Image 1 (cartoon, rainbow, N blue to C red):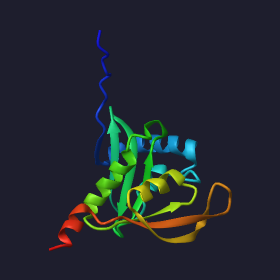
Image 2: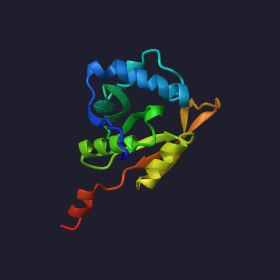
Image 3: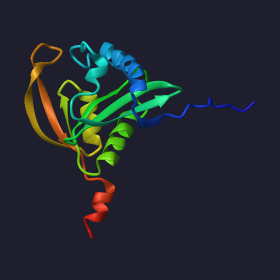
Length: 165
């Protein structure tokens, strides 16, 4: 009898709606329990997911469950990017970043704590360029002022193609 592969549900990425916020908070709680992101649990996590200046937010969903989240500010900064621990290793963070980059239609930037080694590896593997390292006003998981690495996205493929025109 031949081996039958289980049917894998398709992960969809789509704009976040207000109706998605409870599921986003649930996924964020799993991330916080695993990684302490955010370091301090917000009093209103749904509000935390939508800081001032957000112009768009997207979620990765499979079988109705939110697996990941990302937002973009009017300053073209990527923020509130996370993937639930059970969904890691499937390329969802890269897909979410790709969605943001497509929506922005130009370079975007982000900050990441030096404690976020897996995130840093993803950004650098994907061609993001570190532009600065600073100290944050908030504290990391050790209680020290967080070290933040600042990154800018690589040019989009269409930017590379258009640069020769």
